[in-house]
Length: 283
Ligand code: PRT
Ligand code: ZN
Image 1 (cartoon, rainbow, N blue to C red):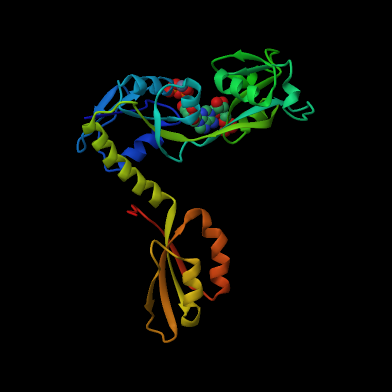
Image 2 (image 1 turned 180 degrees about the vertical axis):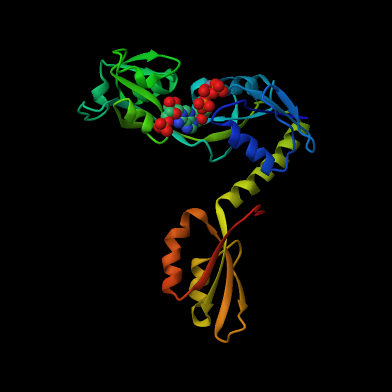
């Protein structure tokens, strides 16, 4: 039985539950539950506070876990990242009051910076050769400059609206973070085997999430050029249309590249372009 630690409630929980469910795992999760057995996979889910997950995984209480990379970097510990999961994306930034003029990191020399992530901040300041005073506070970091507790902050930013509404501006990117799958330093071979199955499934879910199935009609003399733009998994499927001189081309495109190539396809005479989500993708 593989023990999987995920956040009980917060910004990682929905993404973690949804990923496990898309991997075919069935389990009942109710608010007050601390654990839930998977009903159709040799795993048990442990619902924990995100800050505790790296330690639980390092100690082997859980075999694997899903946690924000920011928390992992702050807590340290002897755990390995198995996969980056692409959800709960955010960045950690230094921010200062809007009215202040900012030049570069030397701005922070001798200043006080409030954060809940002292280790990450310490490392960043050291790399930049900046000597500043770190004020560790556990929450509502963004109010620190307003109440005179610090001159700047280092915190998680997603949309930037929290900074804005507290009269702050982002001045340095410290790191980018996303949810990651971590594993214990020592896993029993039977647990490694279950983890292999799970990471295979996660791979298919992530590949499908980042790809789209595309179908289009094109004049026959443009099929070669269009096929070069749409290489697909191996090569595109090309089928003749009932109308002479035309073909239907089917392929897979990376979501991120879609808008880049759509104009090229239209310039080459592609018509009736359909883009369809993919449920699972086995590469
Ligand atoms: O209770 P528990 O300890 O489990 O949860 P938590 O309250 O410590 O963490 P939670 O659920 O808030 O966040 C879990 C993880 O989600 C973080 O460690 C990050 O990896 C990730 N994440 C993604 C975020 C955000 N986006 C985010 N926007 N974590 C926090 N925020 C906060 C941020 O602290 C700031 O207060 O949102 C505010 C900024 O958001 P914007 O959109 O206004 O910029
Ligand atoms: Zn937390």
